[in-house]
Structure formats: structure tokens, C-alpha cells
Amino acid sequence: MKPHDLSTFCQRWLDAWTGNRPDELIQFYSADAYYRDPARPDGLGGRPLFEYFTKLLSKNPDWVWKAREIIPTDKGCVLKWVATIPTNSTSVIVEGLDILELRGDKIVRNEVYFDRSALLKP
Image (cartoon, rainbow, N blue to C red; front, side):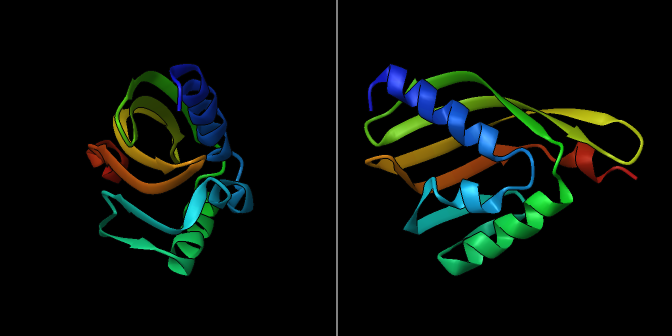
């Protein structure tokens, strides 16, 4: 994908993470996609990925993700982001990155890295 196309793709994809819309989010992933994040360090794919997104988004309908920097790679990109994540009493600002591998316009590998310690505080 060209840098402009990557930027548009990443913005649409990040927007799909907000608002509890797992049906929309899963459309960005191939049927054989692999996904891992700090809560799922062993990763998952296939139907369990949709079930995970459904549960995750239902618990976090109001978080907001914004791209900070997109670094193109041979297979996709590294996306640096910032997220605003509401908690019971406040909102937490978290910075992290995703490694995205694409096949056409579908994500085939998505690895998410960030420090989630601020989210685990009571």
C-alpha cells in the first residue's frame, strides 16, 4: 500500500475500534489473521478473534484511538498511536504501537504493544 493509502486505511481501522462495532472491525482482518496484544500474549485468530473483539469492544465502547506516526514496511506498517481510555473515575492516555502485516487491504497479522499498567490500577 502507498503511504497515503496506509494513512487512510489506518484511520478507518482505528475509527472502527471505537463505538462497540465488532462487525465493522473484523472486516479489516483476513479470515486467517493472527492477533496478539498484552492481554493475549499467545495470540489468536479465526472465529475466536471475532469473539475476543466483541467482548473487548463491549467493555470499552468509548475509547478513542489516534494515529501518531505510520512507518511503512515491506509487508504493511508500524503504527504508533495514542489512545484515550475511559476508566471508572477518569480517562487514561496510553501510547503504543501496532505491527500490521497486510495482504491487499486485509490485516493478516496484528501485534499490539503498550504498557497497560495504568489500566490495571484500581
